[in-house]
Image (cartoon, rainbow, N blue to C red; front, side, top):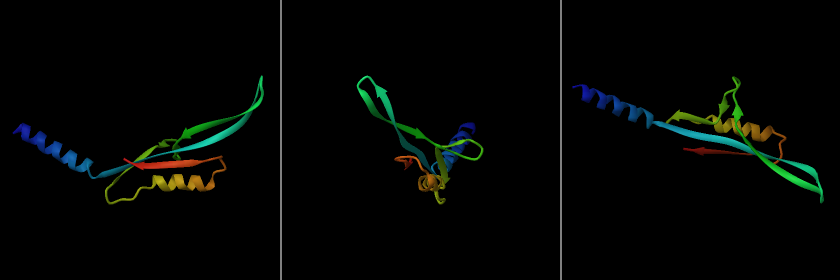
Length: 96
């Protein structure tokens, strides 16, 4: 009897967890600097990758929602993309 209870609980867990969809997001931007070298000036392009921070300073790297809900994380990255002054700012969101 105990084994069947464990099986039922395991089945319920699989059903509940399979009803979620998840999305992962990040952004990249570049910074161009001029550095003095022995051969003269050289342009150096550095690419940075990051994640948005929520108001409580937690990183917004991913979001999981129920299958009938919409993601909000993509919208938050889109707003940043529309308002940023960073060079070559791009964000990517991938549904897992």
